[in-house]
Length: 254
Image (cartoon, rainbow, N blue to C red; front, side, top):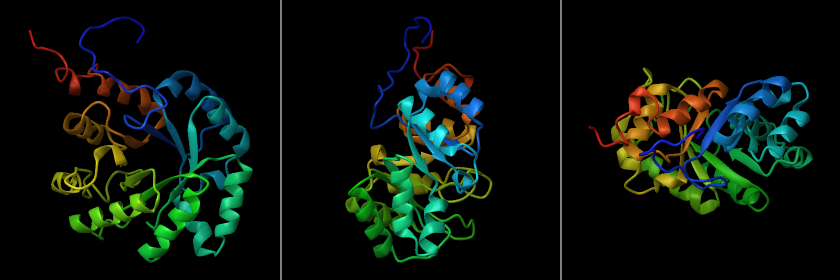
């Protein structure tokens, strides 16, 4: 805060286990990365190099170093993990993470079909060396997973060694925990939270109404991901009641 205001909700301090903001980098330039860190670094915890962008983005190792030097965790998008797995290149995937000095990785099966046992084995193996986030849910909007199955998958992946489980939404915010219109499947969320701790879940919420819903329902320190680079500061204002949507959530109305 640049000045004092009373009745501002308390945010967890970095490095933190909850209240996380994950920014999705879909191809920022080096100059844009520097500018992002300068303005948004204090409000960002994790950077995901979205889908397969790290395979073709110029100066990728320079970018990763900038993020790491700023104290941000960086990992490769789950789609890239799947691209290695479907080609039988799990060893090469681990080698790449080591080469680029990454200490975090994502395990997902949103595009490919693998048994859940095999997915959990990947989590167990990677968790020996990396902090693992695992994604639950399908990228196919026609594929609906029953709430009990979401819970079962999340429980098993956490038991396998995942640090957090990611609730799938894609960058469009219209699959998984949302319907095709982008509305939150609130009954699904409520059911998941009967068995899985909110602190163990990173909710993908690329759209402002989705961010507002989670903050109102689960509080200022809910974990939110797939945030666009230019939405990190606006999200932080939502978290602390300095935007219209959450303005009256933390103050005693006079």
